[in-house]
Length: 431
Image (tube, rainbow, N blue to C red; front, side):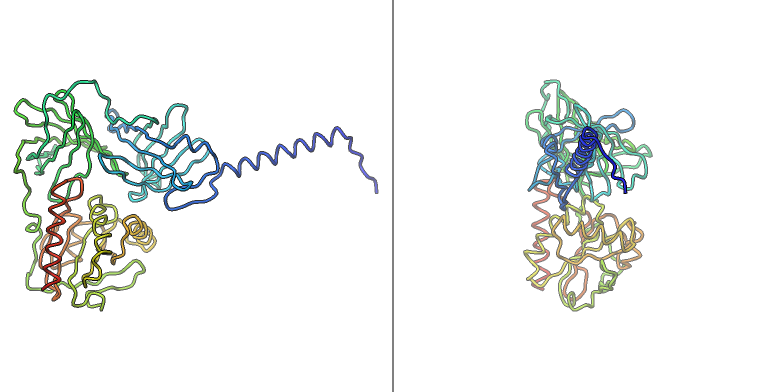
């Protein structure tokens, strides 16, 4: 057998080529994610530090309207976590992925994501569905900017803090009444609008001269409110999202209030006992006759994992149940979802439970539709809002029904709701 002679110079070239290939493979492996957690993704690449900090971002909706928002990326035990900032709220997002020249911030509760191309001075991308169906909303982001709206250094002509009677009117002429709550400090402004279906959560912005600008984004649809302050203190403006615009007029009224939320949802028969039977996350039938619920006061929270006000309610009920479960009371979260197949239910229930620390029972009510609620719960004569909360006594009789949810963005209104909620629970437990 002949042995091939390889010159020493050729051996050196082969060795150099092999070293280059090994170095390339090691670099690729090093730059890939090597572990993940529920709050983000761990990366070995030190360049991810470039993403940590405050960001100002801006959506472009309806081709020309800019809607700003702020977010912060932090490192928690080596994992990147993003928080969407609206007034005093820091709303956590899902996983963050970095691949080559892109960064993706998952907005898991809404099945959306912010998909950015990494550029020299900013991030440029879109808000899109996780399944990438439909049309995305363009968005850009720049690091290190903590303001929301660009300011022109003009002072507000007046302080608009206080409560307002508000009427929203769509292009079709339909009207919806609300209560506006505004808090102003200098030219900084926060607000929320209470409706019978719930509130608009945290709005943040500015007031300069007689012009108001407010925005909000927690992962679903970016929203913008603009208005002018008239000389008589009345606000005239628009609520704008990616699909349409609705005008509103807000009139100052220190006593502005909505109808009593406990009087809006009616029963077909007030003498009839409230019974239920629905599937849990595993497809197992759960009913009001089960020993876990029999003879106990019940709180039936009708909602959906997709609903922002339902998220606020879950954020309240989760810790409340942990603190009160030993008082012989049970909560059932009756969820109406966009899909009811087993795979989808397991996905949305698991992340909802994890996000809000839910240890009470979640059941599948049906498809997210108000008419479906009435079919599933024939004891209800009408259904106005996700969420709606039913209070049932030990004998299975409905004692009260609360329509909508008044969340933490509404200040003293939220405090009053908690007081009324606890008073109702105390009554049910003691009777």
